[in-house]
Each structure stands twice: as structure tokens, then as C-alpha cells.
Length: 64
Length: 208
Image (cartoon, rainbow over all chains, first blue to last red; front, side):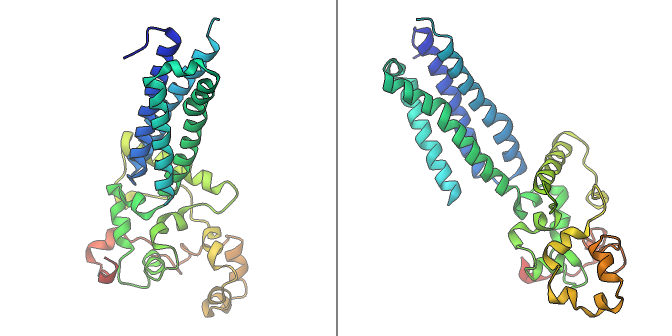
């Protein structure tokens, strides 16, 4: 499933992290409890931030 | 409605990210690079911002506050059938929005008061999940209740400004406005959430 190309592989991993973060955030929106707030902040945002940073790192670390 | 829109945005973002995950070769083109920036960076930030705002709105709800079991006696105290109970009288007569009853009285109406209230809420979460929460009857406010929160609604209201008790002593209203005499602890409106007395209380049935 993962591409042999290092850049594409990083983008795929970044995408998977972003998707997981978004799914956590979406599920927390339907659950009005303090635990949902904590999951949103600490799990959802962490996954999204990790995915976005991995994407940015992939872009700036490319060697032409 | 807002929640549905945010979920739709999240769903759209997930679909677009999935395209990148399945076909990473698309990012070799200029359009693919722009799409990758949009869906792996810009849209997730937008989703976090909108989702965070929705979560903060949820955290104002009475349902949210009362979902912690140590808060449930405080929720029951809103249904006490006695107009002398301040919180119950406000809740049952819709002097505060019933779906944001806790937040309306317990937020801080000073500048950055909302931020202070949210930080207080995070502290509650920490104590509830990781600390040692006190028994419901032992829960205390961090600082004495400020008249400012009462006056946010009552200042200027005829019932407050011209009330017989409030005007009987000409010194009283200025002292209340200056927070020198407490609305709650001066013996006037001192029964707010009588948690220890709930076992003997009569409850208003219509409130559910």
C-alpha cells in the first residue's frame, strides 16, 4: 500500500494521521461530555498536528 | 446545524486526503501539490478551528456540566420546589437559559472572563479524571461569588433597582454595585445550591 518513493510514503503517512485526527474530531462533536473535549484536544489535535507537520517536513526536505 | 456543517467539512477533507493517500503520485503535478497543501495543512487547520469553537460551545451546556457525577446533585438542586432557592428559582423561571444554566451564572463577566472560566473548567477536568475530586457537598468556589455576575443581568432591571428591600436602605444598592455587600452571603439570597439538604427537599416535577 505504501509507496516505495520516500516522499510519497511520507505524504501517505501524513494523510493517514490527518484522517485519523479528523475521525476523532468528528466523533467527539456528537458526544457532549468532558471526555470528548479532552479527546478532541489531546488526541485529535495531536494526530492532525503530527500529520500536517510530517507533510510540511516532507515538502521542505525534498532533494531535487 | 453548525455541527452538521463541520462534520460535512471534515468528511470532505477526509475524502480528499484519502485521494492523496491512495494516489500519492498526484502530488507530482502543480495541481496535486496545491491540493496536498490544501488538504494536509489548510483544511485540517480550518477543521480544528471550527471543531474547537463547537467544543467550546458544547462546554457551556448544562448537559456537559452535569455529565460529571459529582455535579449531579447541583443539577438536582435546580429542580427544588422552593422559590427561596436562588439557583432553582433562576432555572425554573428561565431567568437563565435552561440549556446553559451553569455557565450563565458561573462564568466571569470581566474582560477575558470567558477564558478564565475555560481555564477553570480545564482544572476541573484535571481534578475529575486525574486528581481526587471532593464530595459534592464539599465543592467550593475558588473565590467568593462576585456581584458582577448577578448585576450582568439585574443591573438596570426595575425589579432590582426599585425592589422594596433593595431601596429600603439607600446605602445598599451602591454597596451591591461596588461588591462591598454580597448578594449571596449577606443573608439575603444565601440559599443557592443546598446540596446537603437535597434529601429532605421537595422537587418540581414538571422540570423533569
